[in-house]
Image (cartoon, rainbow, N blue to C red; front, side, top):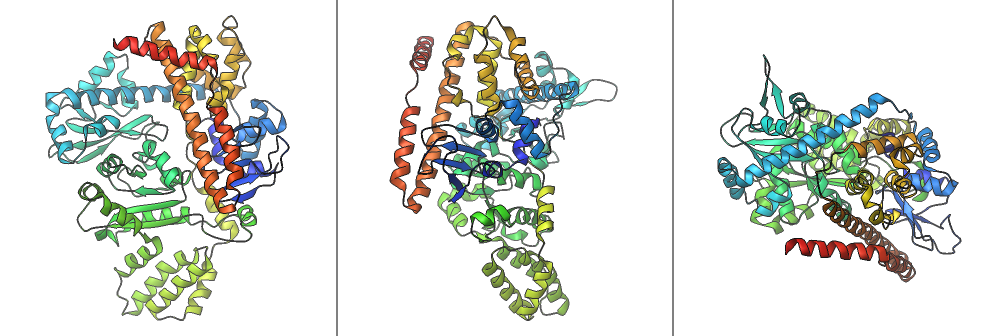
Length: 616
């Protein structure tokens, strides 16, 4: 992980911005008078879940914590990086070894992507893959879903993949490091996966990091995952997260199911906020990924696993992470309210049915189950009491020992009292006695802070399209004229925008080293990574078309971000009575954004003509 990513993870943008401006709570976000221009009505908004800010007034600009500090203090990226690194406790180092590791990791991504393409081609075309195709058909998986998730097939061969990838220039030792082949005693290699349905696993940035593989015969184990590698750690991955993160943010809810097929079925039927935890109980790392997207979580569980200890451990991890009290800063903004950060619920499935069966048979039934999901504490009561004999003192004592610590950590006082009353009736103990014991168990502010610090951070979302665009521009000087038409605001990542501006402010004659010398050390590493990426061979016209398409997609992303912000703000403004004011501000900004430069218009038109000519 780069220092930039680590700083973004460790620092809360609300904390940083509040050092410079007075923020007011506005729904799930915060607003203030813009610090960059004079105004009477707040048009400056901070979006903590996205880690971004935006001014909807005359500035019309936004960004992340780096761009805010740069603009506020009138300093360059390097200075802002050092200020924020010191605040986050991140040591800034630039070691050759670290750069070598970055290149190795990038190589592993390329190998896994090549393997995914190979497996996918075989699933679609190989005669030997008929069993895999039939299995998917029987499970109701459509051709569109197969293509979208790039499902594949590994042949019943000892070295088919190894030979294919070695033929593309990858070495056997690299394939071992990628978890795709195994080194044989005495020399040589054999494929890790044979005669299996192959399911590419992608990180939240959309890069293939490994595979899940389902046996198509009686081979054991039925499901086999990639081994641990530098980029594959199943405890820190969620299947489908790259496709689900947008829907999770939009709907304010993440749904956790058990298996790959459950995720595929949900997405196929338009329920895109569904992910799976790689065949393991939910871990802190996985919960950390979800917390960056939403504060609400629902877990789909079989009704028969109420007392299963592995299930309870996963639920406990989710409860602890999602039920933390708001901190001192948030209490001030919430005027003393101490609501829990988020809610965890349990979706109880019909006995003997998996989510994919429920979804395929009756999507409306799945939606009903989500709407009727039980609060997690209700599930804990059911799970604990189902394994105990409450007619005996030992059973009552065990129920108190298991349930009271969980009740004590409920932040909402009314909710806490209701569950204390319920426990009191269940075990026949005085409610006041239980309340006193719960108060003794309640964690202190210091203990909560220590717990929060110990939770592992998750990798910041990457910007693959921005990086691809920069790679095109950096590696192909002939694209400069087209690239100069790109607005810097199309680059959401500050490091990408700074790199683009550095490229824009140099000439072809200056050369690569001139660009590099003008960058901060951390950006030099980012530049080196992009320059080391291998692009497929293409003609000049194909490269121009690729850049035109990339530019169009970046523009669409930019407008979608603005439109999403508009919807959030209008929803909040409606409840605050100033909808018309904000609507006018936002629509003015969107109108400006919808007026691309004449250069971009020419670029789009040229790409359209070339695509049309290529089809004729």
